[in-house]
Length: 454
Ligand code: NDP
Image 1: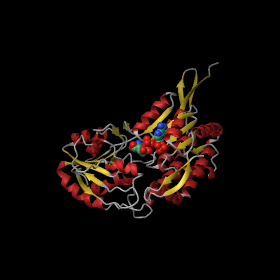
Image 2: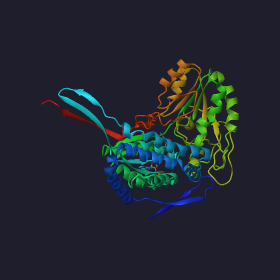
Image 3: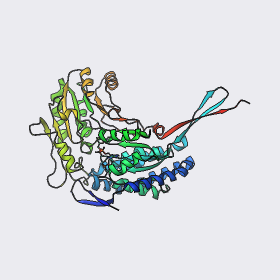
Image 4: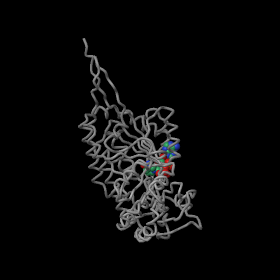
C-alpha cells in the first residue's frame, strides 16, 4: 500500500508514515460500512448508548496520548490539544444520550393514527479539514452514530494521526467492526469517492468554500444529503460603552487561537471611532503577551502554521509596505512560524479585509455608529461567527439580529459549544451541526398512517 509521511510543523521533521488509501480501498470500506449498518441500526437504543459512553470513556482515558499526537502532527499547543481531545470525549458523551430519546410523533388524523419515525440514513462520509482534526471529526461522528448510521471518515491528508487513533479507540471500546472507519489519504481520491459512491447517503464536509462547492455539485448528482461548514471572515465589534480592557485583552485569543487557522477567527476588529486610540493602546500589551513557540511547552499560546505553503499564503496578506500597526514575535529556524500581526488602517478593497486569511493576521477599522458597524460586519460573502462588545443590552440584541452570521457572542469571544447549534449564513455553510437537534440532519423522517376504522 502506498504511504506518505506526516511532518511536524514546529520542527519540519517527519513524525510518522501512514497509508494513503486508494479509491478501491475506499469502496471496500464503504461496502463494509453499509454491511455493518444493518446490525448497528438494529442495535437496541440502550446498547448503542452504552457503546457510545464506552467510546467516550476510552477517549477520556487517552487524552494525553491524543494531545501529544496533535502537538507533533499539527503543531497545536499542548493545552489546546488537551482541550480538543476532551471535546471528542464530551461530544460522544453528549450524543450517547440521544439514541434513547430519538422520539417520533403521533399526529392527529381522521380514520386512524399517524406516527413518525426518525430513520438513519445509512453510511455517512465525514470529510475533515486540517485545522481542528479532533473536534470537527467528533461533531459529525457522534450524532451520526447515535442516529444509527455508520461512518467513514477522511481526515485531512496533513493531519490524520489523531483520527486514526480515535478509530482504534472506538474498536477498543467495543464498537463493532465497520461502524466507524478512518481512511487517511487524498481528498481528490478518498474524499471524492465518498462523494461519488452511491452507498454513502450523506456527506458532512468542513473545509474551504471552493472544495465545498465541488462537493455540493457531486452530492447533487445523487440528491445526497449534505452539511457544509466553510470559511469565515468574522467581526469583533467593540462599542465605546464596552468594557474596553476586557475586549482588548481577549481580542488576541479571538483571532490568534490555533494561530488564526480557525473558521471562527474574528479577523476584523471594528472599534467605535471615539475609543479607537485607547483600544489600540490596550491591544498592544495583550498581543505582546501571546507567547509563540514550542507547542509541547505548557506556556505556549500559539504554535506554528500548518505548512510552508500555508505560511506563504498568510504572508501574502502582509506585503512590503502593508500598514502593520502592531507585530508580535515568533521563533526563527525550523518550523512554519508567523508572528501575530495587526494591520490598521486597511481599505475596504484590501485583500486582508475581504478574504479569509486563516492565519494570525487581523485588521482593525473604525466605525461611527451602530448602522455602520453592522454594514461593515456584513461586507463579506461569509457569515460564520462574530462578537459584540457593549454594556447596552438593547444594542447587543439589535446588532446581533443585524449581523448576518450564524454564531455570535456578546461580551465574549467564545464560538462553539457542542450543546448549541453551529453553522454559517451565506457562503459559510449549509445546515447546522451540534446542539440538541443534530440528529435531525442524520435521519430522514418516515411518516406511517395506520387505519383504525373497521
Ligand atoms: P480543504 O477544502 O482544502 O480541505 C478540506 C477537506 O476536504 C480535506 O480533508 C481535503 O483533503 C478534502 N478534499 C479536498 N479535495 C476534495 C475533493 N475533491 N472531494 C472531497 N474532499 C476533498 O480545506 P482545508 O483543509 O484547507 O481547511 C481550511 C478551510 O476550512 C478554511 O477555509 C476554513 O475556513 C474551513 N473551515 C471551516 C470550518 C467551519 O466549521 N465552518 C471549520 C474549520 C475549517 P486533503 O487534506 O487531502 O486535501
